[in-house]
Image 1 (cartoon, one colour):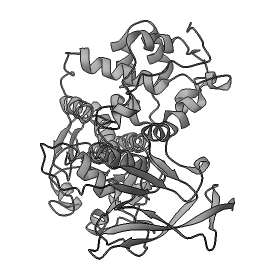
Image 2 (cartoon, one colour; image 1 turned 30 degrees about the vertical axis):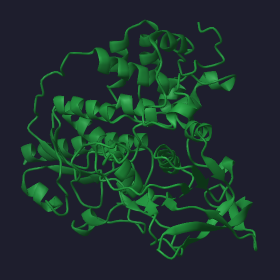
Image 3 (cartoon, one colour; image 1 turned 180 degrees about the vertical axis):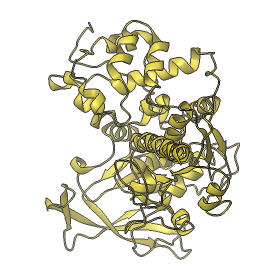
Length: 469
């Protein structure tokens, strides 16, 4: 049993004053001794509430028991039965609101650190395992997956394990989707994503990059080429803006653009010639994980001051508690109950300040969060030379505009049956941010898994009908 069963084993991290100057991973991971001590805190509950809290149904008690026994490869094999990206999920999944939120240990202390243990197991496997996956055996059926992000990779991995010949069509030059363009190196090293994608390819998944479905090839043409079903996991890469004066000034970025330049195009690395304006004082508008990522990147790029501008209080802030804590440790300023109303420019058309209003919280709105209201006459300015807008993204309209019989909702999400991920067009399924708008990696993966099961049911049913005809 752990030394203090009510308190989890802390994970070592880089010192804040050091890490704010580099892009190395902040959290350093458990040692074997730490992992076994934390695993010993698990009560191995018969009711297994933690599994119910996991969108991909990882068999949590089993893999933790294997850690306790020192059987790390067994623990890994237990995880990947349902989760094809364990090293990724161990780092970026919001376990505190999912599996760990259901942990019985959390009723009288701290929940078992399930995410940290998952990361330990996945990293151990990447470091120690030399064995290749079993040879792929085709069942004779072909499926196309659009997008090599979390939803697409999850769906593709599940289908390949069932014997389907899966080809993933990815618009970028590399696989991973938001994992490579959206999440910074200091939270999710890109070699981790690359290793987990490579494992899927070894297991039989084919990935075609630089292929923009809707331009390079259409959904109709995929069916003509013999694919029996199509899964759309194209994400939500279309940034949202505030619609305020000054958004066209030099020095204003969407978080999507800023993070893509930073992560996918390596703007932080002097070996790459990626244009990104050097900034002194930066305001990041928004309160989610993307806002935290952008703010922490700006700080590492040499900004003297970086502030989060958010119209509600810290209680309503949607970012993960850990990310907010790390940002505060690194010196990010939080301007809460603050609403931007105008971006001001200088004579060179460059950002010079952000005009804001003070806010106060009123009764909860339909989201359940307290509704912010402006305090009249409270206008003030924040001196900045760059503004990053991180208020969300929506699905790119290209695929639905080039595909017949594919219905969307009022904000551009593809309409699906939530039980099956079937769209309004037979044989076409969708999931992840292309359906929900910007959400978490693990929820996208969960949708990909549901779709894989539905695609299997759909194709096998069609095959049965053909045999009976």
